Length: 181
Image (tube, rainbow, N blue to C red; front, side):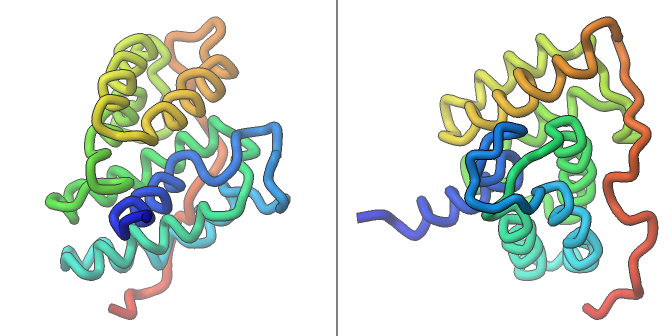
């Protein structure tokens, strides 16, 4: 019998890897996870900024829904979006692990790959981040999928000859409507 915690953990990891592998598109839908993440950001942000535990958990659920039943079509964009979500969540919801309970090290590993702007990818930290994701695999069953998406799919496309790569495309809305919470 599957426990509620296992179901929640399975859904929560979708934040990083979605339900399908990147690019290949083995999903039954052609909706991109990147588009769904873009569309859900403002509501997520409003909930997180309340700094209330229940609202933070609700934000985590919204995030999981945004990456359910979709395809990661652009692993690099997905990685950049993820760091923006993580950096908003971490200081405002400090006692809640993202993407799920037991996987709290994943955001740390991801953030190693970015400067403060969240747009500049630090390719020179690929090896350190890879080791971090590998360590996270011991306590988080989803770390292997996250590691594959970011280390093996996203980074090789932008880090071939660069120590740093500046991602210029807009990945999250630049402004959101006033909070309803």
